[in-house]
Length: 431
Image (cartoon, rainbow, N blue to C red; front, side, top):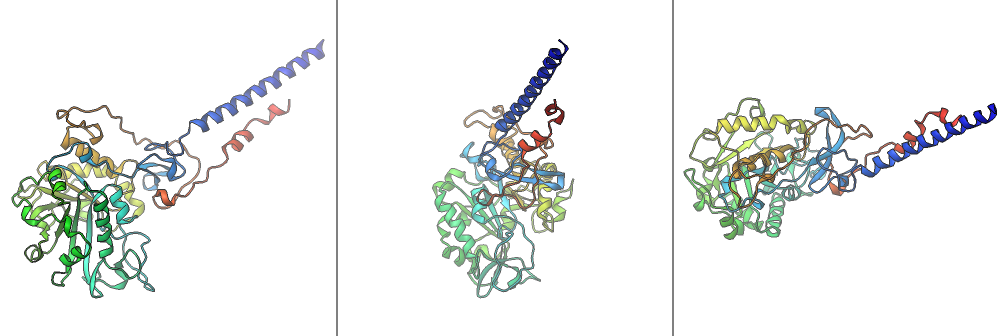
């Protein structure tokens, strides 16, 4: 009798152990099944590769803010004109890249080591495809042509010259812009040139040779006293879809290229432009609260660019600086937000800030995504904004640059099944 009772207890314990194992396995498979992957992950969801994240998102991290594990971040802008169209050009805000040509890993001149800083991580074409609509380019006379480069004592040398491929001048970048405009007939691009070109008619001939003259917005049609610009629809219909500004005043009369400080207000660049609570105007610019210009370019990048710090710069401190500059500019939102490493963020980054700016100014909503075409001002859709709560998935590790879908690298995750299996108490199998 006692033996039977002992056998019964042993059978119960074995049955319980099997049941417990089954529950563990079931829980594991449910976790794996419900985990996002293959393009289903949203902003702030953990990811292992770029293809895990949904459209317009990339797999990155932000160690500068203690977020070392990979998660999905915004990588593309919402075009405000696609939601609220037909307004004057100066009523919208656009993403601009500082030193758009200064690209990490861009090839240097053959046999010459490049000694310079980098400001972006992808090609100008990719920047435009991701919603960048403003390019800041430094142009110099070099080797009998015009090149894009960082200067050394005001001159361009081999070790600071930037090219798309070996031994090619600035026209290649402009041809990327021409290709984009020809393939996207409703888009408008702005180029701001830090101009060191002394060749007579050098810039105007460069744009003609790049095929961009057919998109040129004429200086004669630009507002001179702070009035509204033509509507985006009017600019598209007239094919005036390229705005070009130079830092040299004389070229407006000589070459028909708009003098930047006549049409654009601008805050100080570099470290003074990222100092909390302060938004001074650039010395060449009129005061930010001047009403004599209707475009405002807000610089937000440190004097020395550091890739790994950019995600921190594009967090809450950027939103705070936008508020500071808004007040300094007499309640005027920036039309262009110029940054380094625009892809890097702690989740939404510059894209969310632009969404917020455009939402407030175009429809009275906290984000452009909440705006409704044709609805009264202040009529907003109910949009849930992702929080920036800490990541909870600690599996795997991640390092390196922001991933792009064409070159995504896989992050190794330990075999969760094996870990789960061997964590089951061995006593269950010793019954």
